[in-house]
Length: 626
Ligand SMILES: Nc1ncnc2c1ncn2[C@@H]1O[C@H](COP(=O)(O)OS(=O)(=O)O)[C@@H](OP(=O)(O)O)[C@H]1O
Ligand SMILES: Nc1ncnc2c1ncn2[C@@H]1O[C@H](COP(=O)(O)OP(=O)(O)O)[C@@H](O)[C@H]1O
Image (tube, rainbow, N blue to C red):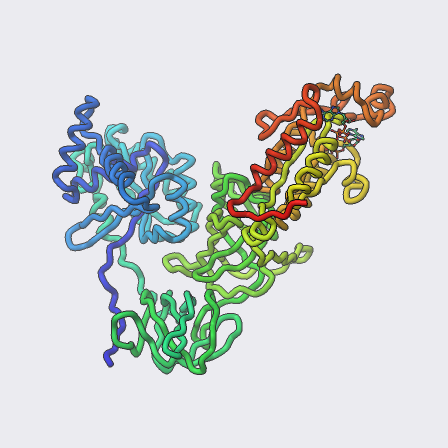
């Protein structure tokens, strides 16, 4: 049997190119591929042709457009890899069609970049996206950053002005604990200092971009680190059980003792196999293997195999950096799945330690993380999680948060265990193993929240109760959360000040979310007079939230006055009454509008029930009707 340890193969070095919009990223890619002779002849002709047609000099960014068109015609891919060669060394520019996909690839490690070129328009200096991208480079741990000060022709190649921009960008990176390997003053459009040294900047003695790329170190070897083999799967074949996975770091030899996951069971490696080759005596980082163990223990997918002398960290509260991708802000109390190599753990955000202000890059206390925002948070799990703290250049601690629909909502490199501080809310919420899909299959419909807002007396309760009966008769698991009813119990401590109404809405939204997560259809009837409060409800509930406007003029409501409240308010017996001396902000774009001053209640209840059924329908669902 031969020693089959893969030596460091000369794989292409992946790089990413980032920068503020219009700072010249696409032009740079086109220029770079052309000047390094990495374009097929036909491509150049195509670019010259389309540039001429528009009466322009050669426009290198058209190259990317034409590659994009080719991609659009081919199979859908979520990552674009543009290979190019510099001398004997291979590189690949990792890009993605679309800004969000690009960010997603960066945080999941799909981009897997060794180095980054940060493009900054020298005439404009660092802008908002420059800061955001630099933060992202820090977050995902890219250690080698080349700053390309682009468009220096617009500064007449003036040394003093270029040096000033270099200093500004350098200061910005220093504040992020990132160090630029080199600053290259260049003009991607004109070709200065890309592959050819610029004659316009005799004062510049540093490398051109291609020279700078040639200096990017080859990836560090992960072989010398202690073993980590995340279990991908366990197969049974010919009476043997194979534990399959890709070695993330270290090496494993036949005869080694390994420890399996959180159960901490030791076992001996009996054999190491891989497809289509003879069995190995050893394997190392980067290789995918199937091993057999003695005794024949059964790990689970997600378990980490490691050496007994260098175990990973274990904690149930994890201090985590965060790059937040969801369109809605993140709040404390939200639950997700934390993907970590092949493992998935249920976690809850138990606190937001700080949120980065992108204008000045300061870290401040905050109650929510905005879309594309950066923060430091604590994630809590119900049990302990094994991990290695995030280390740039490795896959260690590279967590990703996914929501109930398996969508990636955040990059979450795990920094380490979170100590429990005095006064800390050390909560460890659990989440259900029963999925939304399981529930929908059993109930024949999915859960959803229908938020009925409108003036007192507009008809919210009347329509919700009538729709509830109709839906129930059709086999829908439905309930109503009614303002008056909640205020008699859960919210009995609340009055009608603005702050108390906000709290009332928050509580109702939290309850609605729990019921929705349990697969129910929930009709909430609250005046909820302020747009900001209804927006809060939408954010707490997240998916499957629909705003329904129960619309009737104040005069109609006042005339109906079913509870005599308007009369009491007019008589000054009740103060702060909605519509009289407290505001009501009508929805601007409700999903459904029910005009109760014009249409009878029966018809509107049927409309509401129909709307609800349409929204919660699942294909193939079987419902029992009564
Ligand atoms: N000051 C004042 N303003 C508005 N409403 C008042 C007030 N005082 C008592 N009520 C009664 O409380 C019901 C509204 O409660 P909500 O929980 O829906 O209100 S809110 O969403 O918190 O604004 C409301 O019920 P509906 O008529 O069903 O809307 C009233 O019965
Ligand atoms: N088209 C209609 N839709 C709903 N309610 C109506 C309609 N026409 C008259 N009403 C009457 O208006 C009143 C609405 O009161 P309610 O449902 O308690 O309102 P809210 O819950 O919004 O305060 C009820 O007395 C109801 O019978």
